Image 1 (cartoon, one colour):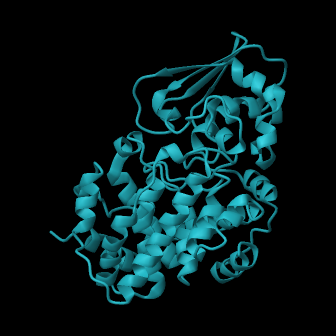
Image 2 (cartoon, rainbow, N blue to C red):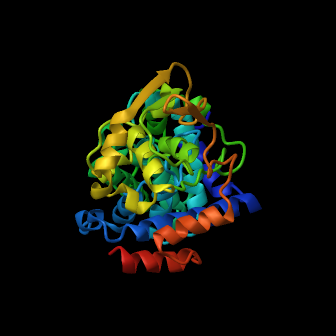
Length: 382
């Protein structure tokens, strides 16, 4: 049997996109560029000013935690594959090749990989970025398999980085690692394609679970409507429109759905993005939490801190995913609100109005193609 890297490389070069694939790709480009340019004035831009394009664009694109998510793998696919594609001069075909590989590798690594504390966006992201860059650079399938193997030593990232600059930075480094691997393969570097199989096994994944059937990105992509961890989207959705003085808050949810929500008493905007307690406070205070809800000042609001202190979190056993089961929120012991799927999930796609609201929050016109997107990032995030 061919090595997994060889199978993935052949798939990436031979796959014929469908109309649905092209629509997903266009939405991914618009969403990623919007959230990247929205963060152009963040400190992440200054922190990454000396890094290569792929690293800088991916880190800035991820710092707001407003980018799309592939739920079966828990990977932020586009914020890795769009910058890698653009940095290597590619287009929709290169993005889709990288996105398909990232979805499959992340799914093969499985939920157990995520629960052990790995950041799948980085572990699966570096090899995927290598594929996107390889297709963009016009490499052969054999060279692409080599690039996949060369990305293995650079594929890593952990969840303890969540709520710090480290989360966005490790995503940026993963995107750049893939581009470097592709350029090394183009220059004639050699590697053993079976290194990817060994890597998968060492991380608890199963090479045999890499399934090449189905659409380019099996399961589709979830679009975030609020700039925070996807695990917080359901409680926010449940509480939108709720008003009144709240004195007690009880949350009941499967433990799996709180895996990345590691900050229970946040004091910074970045920590607030990974806090169930603050997500609830922001929803109650702001109605529709947007970019202004996740600043340091917003998290430190006295009323936000009061609401955070009221949250009693009850987790139940079972589940294997951020949207496993449902979230129940009981206010003042009497009003129980239940949410299973947040708006923006693949099975509950965002409306045109919801997308327009997000893009307005980011402050950009959404009409771009790949060349203009590259020019825009070169100008706005340089």
